[in-house]
Each structure stands twice: as C-alpha cells, then as structure tokens.
Image (cartoon, rainbow, N blue to C red):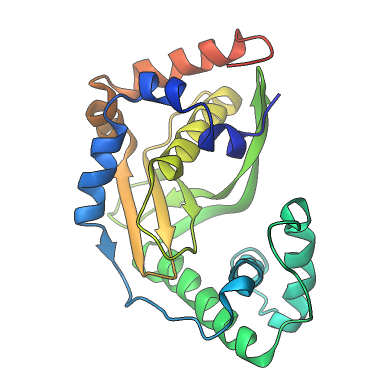
Amino acid sequence: MISAERFAVTSGSYWSGVLPRLEHFIRVSNTGPRVFAAPLLLRSSPTRHAFVTETAFVMWKSIMTAATNVDARIAQYDARARLQAVRRQVPLGADISEEEQADADILANRLHTYFTEVRVLSDVSIDARLAGCGPILGGSADLIGVDLSYGVHAHIIAEIKSVNRKFRSTDVRQLVTYLVLYFAMYGEISDIMIVMNPLLGRSLEVEVDKFFEFATGRPSQEVIPELLFDWSTAGTSL
C-alpha cells in the first residue's frame, strides 16, 4: 500500500508507460509558465524553508476557508503537526523567528492573491481528502474548486510547490493521481490542473483534456477511467 503522494514520486517505469510524453510536456511547460510575481528571495535559513512555507500554507488556508487572518506565531503549531511525518528530513527546531514570520506573511499573501485575483474561484476546498483506490491509500489535494476566471464554471485541482526549482514530472504525476482518485469518488473529470509556485511566482496551468492529448495522444475521458480500472484491480502493488 502506498500514499498518492509517494506513488507520484516513485514507480518511474510505470509512469513512463502511462504518460509517454510527460517529460516533453514538462520541458515545453518550463519554457513559458504563467508569471504572476517576481521570484522571492527568502531571508530565512534554507534549512527552515520547509517549516516557513508550511506555516504560510496554514495561514493561507485559514484566510480561504474561515476568512480569518492567523498570525504566523499561531500557524506554526499546525505547520509543525503537518510536518511530523517528515521530521527527520525537516529541522523544526525553535519557534518561528521574526524574519521567518515576514517570509511566511509574503508567501501567504502570494497564495491568497493568486487564488482570489489571478484566478477567481468558488466552492473551494483546501487539503481536500481523496479516498484511496486499490493499493493507493489516498491523498490530500492542496486545492479543489470551481474556477470562474473566464466566465464559465471549470473544475480545478491545484497543487502548491513552494520550492526553488522548475516544474518536474513528479508534480504533474501527483495531479494525475488526484484526478483519478477524484473521478473514483465523484465520477467526474476535472477541467483544469494547476501546479503553482508562490516562491518563484510561476504557475503551470493546463486543461486536463489537452494535457492527456499531449502526454498520451488520447482524451482524458478514455485514459482516466482506464487508470482507475488498473489501480482498482492491481491488488497490493503497481
């Protein structure tokens, strides 16, 4: 059994067979991502960046779901709890410093600006839990909602990557996993998938059907149900 997030970053040969043109898609996407802000140089120590970015996520989640501004000094405790699973890799150390609070404030504001001004959303769910399927235990999508940006109702799934790097195939594999799990739960295929990086001020935004046509040569209406069937009948491993 494996989590959706772990599945996305492993099983490389499996993913190469499922999405044969994914690497080419990533190379093309990295040449022209959407730019919504200038790259941000964090003042806090690189060893604390995961803690700072997780604190920013908690602050942003509170604004989006409860319309409440949560101070970084309070949000840090939820961030610590969320990072417990990777505490050996992420030094949690002391309480958040003033410098780190300032970084978290900027990142939380960027997240809020993107998801309220760059994109116009409704019916938003943050940390949306998706049930498992076959050997996949399930996972939590950073954001699921309805995008009204272009005057139509488009269902989106978005993942946030606050990292100092370009987009990677594993980012998209994670979204594809969520797309299949969402389809398993609701019988619907999302319209748009997004990888958003508040640190670099970049986002990868693509219509789900166009992505599958590019990566597989087939429509999402064929590929996603097939993946669901494969995973549902895979036994204990993929």
